[in-house]
Length: 441
Image (cartoon, rainbow, N blue to C red; front, side, top):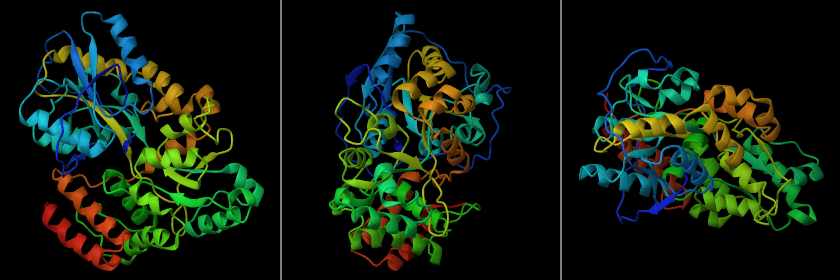
């Protein structure tokens, strides 16, 4: 998730540092059943006011936000954007945005929201409903990304980056060991054993994801459950996590740590810790987001594996895995001044031109469908076609207004099982009970 994703933060910076205690995360989609990119209906109040604005976003791990915002500022000297760079942790970003909204502060104008935060921010009226007719390019975005920006069929954000989980692997070592990229967890374990039998692989760890107790663990747990054929919340909106399939998914994570195939330190990994471990050459396989690709390919000495790795779809229990849908939407704070400028900034940053410039520099997944078919981009980023398929088939995290409580419950159950403080079966039974009280129809 960037989280995100994700993965997707940038800078021209003024650093904001509120110190907060978080619990709860955010949420997407609510009972939003919408899916089309229709930009014909108008809704939402008129967006008025022009002048300087502030863009609140997570820590810029890509290094490219400065360029993107500078491009806007050079064209709009009287409507300059100042970046308030929030912490790297998605949970802490959300906490600061909520604190700002609860006191009705106008300190933030445009918010860079994780796709699962839409329902919570919209339901609490912390973000402004957007008139779709002011954003004429919505129909050109991947439908799955646009769906994340809606709540109860109304638009509250514009998708600027998407995300699908990918399996990064050491192609040089798999080739030398004579094995193909794995499609199942069992194949991944076998491939890792063969790589570790090589002199170059003797000291390497097999696999890591994002296992620290934060939003990334919700993503990785969900992918493990889905990859085993289970669900956390079913299509009917009801939790259904106390099942043999979910147990098989959780046991993949538990057994990986217990057996030593996952490094002990991975229980503390967020996106960046995993990326650095992979780039330093200590991992054979890594689950992470597309943004890692450009950083791992750098030739400035920051990556020891440039030219030595490749990307494949996530593996699953008996066949290919299932990604959790990630990405970020830009929304306008309900309490912002200069909302007309904020809307124009969002249109600028979400345009095909800016998204293309961003992927070229950062490898972050765009939301424009056309960019996945761009020949030059596919040559530079050969994983774009499978990534598009991954995003289109990815499963969303639970779409509930109380997402913060839901993701906290998921993290506590998964982390407890992975650290050995509760048996996996008990963890899932407790999680089912907890989710049943939090998710109401």
